[in-house]
Amino acid sequence: MGQGREPKGSAEPEGGLAYAEPDSRGWRLMRDPASTSMRLVLALVGPSGVRTRGVGFNLRAGAAVRFGAFESGLLLESAGVYEPDSEPGGGAPEGSQLVGGGVMPGNVLTVGVFERDARLAAKESGVPLLRIALEPVSPDPASAGHAIPLEVLKARVIPEEMALQVDAPGATPRPSLVPVEIAVGMLTLT
Image (cartoon, rainbow, N blue to C red; front, side):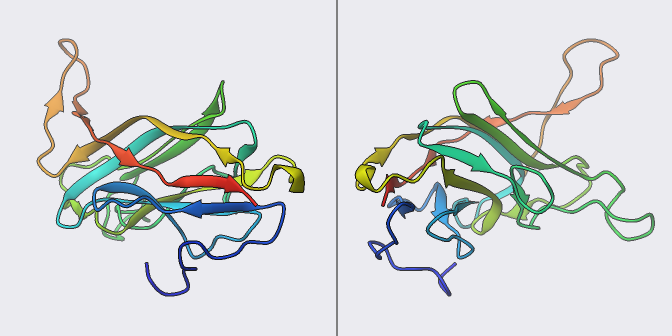
């Protein structure tokens, strides 16, 4: 991450968002260099040395922020670690990556990026895997310094050694998801 990232505790213009990163080496949401004072981009980063085939999580945020879309129109951006869909003959099987997200009631973002083909190699997870964006609903300088709650409600990964579950005879096998904890930092209005 390093280059281009503002140091912790750096000053932000009034009416925006500030984020103090969590002190964790495990699964965590880190400030992405694409962040501005009015659009906080958070990257999901896993622990170094852990290989996975996908990750998804539900994040609840306080009412003072909304989840922002990326150029694609999606509420998440794959960081390109998991095999992307490709043209026939381009390497990865067509339809190999599943990317999706949406906002549920209670300002809960649900997002995920997964490799759907077990023949593909698992990927190093100690790098940004996906990005999400938060924006203030209506910047209010009078609210400066107020914390905005962020809570990961559920998070799961497809581990390197993927097991397939079959729910019923004749059903299509699906990968087993393993629960993980994701650390979040302190989000405040500036």
